[in-house]
Image (cartoon, rainbow over all chains, first blue to last red; front, side):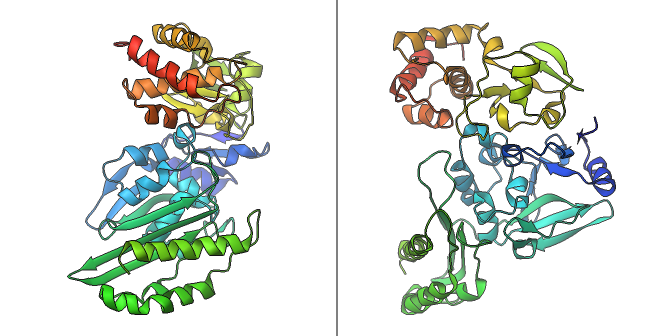
Amino acid sequence: MVNGYHPELLQEALAIRAQEAVTPYAGGTDLMIKPDEKARYLFLNKVSELKKITEDADYIRLGAACTFTDIQESELAPEILKEAVSQIAAPAIRNLGTVGGNICNGSPKADSALIFWATDSKLRLVNSRGERVIPMSEFYLGRNETSLQADELLAEILMPKTGLSHYYYKKVGVRNALAISRVSFAGILGAESGRIVNCQTAFGAVSEVVIRRPDLDAMLSGKTIEEAKASKEDYLRAYDQVILPIKGRISAEYRKAVCMNLLRDFLDSNGI
Amino acid sequence: MVKFMLNGQEVVSKSQANQRLLDVLRHEFRITGVKCGCKEGECGACSVILDGKLVNSCLVALGSIEGSTVTTIEGYRETERYAALDKAYASVSAVQCGFCIPGMILASECILAKNPNPTEAEIRAGISGNLCRCTGYNAIVKAISIAAEEGKGLW
């Protein structure tokens, strides 16, 4: 088959990737909207190593070719991720679309990618010679632009096992099903003995890449709820300065207002 | 050459690996119960069951289904389950123009295969990717719950 390869093993896939200019194909739901007649697809949907969900001491490890349905049905996948993927498109698309494709497509509107940003997940990229594990922020270079090399494939997403249970997620779209996010927001706030130990927020569909600013979220870390309340307006002002939505089909003003409303609601829901 | 099971028979497609399954089914195999609505996964008219799961055949490249099993309405209509859905849809006039119905029936099958006693909300979620511009959905939702009730034991 000249214009497509369907390897069963990751090693075979990487050998092809090293030798030829192929387009990795996981679920196909983004690629097939505009099929490229000249493309040679490297079909990854039957590579079993890319379809596993496992755990180790620190991480839940999601194979890049796991579909959104696989995530929804997994006992290991964190709730925050399950909630976000259950709102993607509709069942028939969730049965095909994958977390790896959602990331590698490079869109700031990718609903599962937003969760990987908010949770400070890491990506394990492999080629035929070895691997590298990098944070989301090193993967995204711009809109539809990633640091994935021509001989590499995304093998796994590594989600931290702890600290994700207390979360807030909202997707704003025009309808319940089959909606592309106009704005999406995920926030996680963890507290131990009355003090905030982690505050992690991420804004999707707003800018060229997802907005994730740990430096600003640090303003609330280590504080009690009362102390965080006192810093609330400073925190909101800081975000007000860095959220600079791009103008698209939806006005930048609208996106900005929704982002700030969601951030405020996230704080309110935590008593801040 | 891509080999797969189509409605219970092994077939070999001579189409290119990057062709849409939708086009291969309609043009090469003349399986026209698979409807082409939008070619972007928005309407569900081209739904087929691929390895037991509902998918939009417009978003499936042929090369990705080597060794897989595909069921379209042409294969599904030979089953007892189809007969139960057919009767239920007819009983509440859940079909008007009919264009969405092959996809809608296969979506109904996937809802009931996973959960033989779905709630109304579960039914609505299950058909949320299948657009119907005639019925307003209420009759279709009702038909699926009637099929679940009358077809007890089939799913």
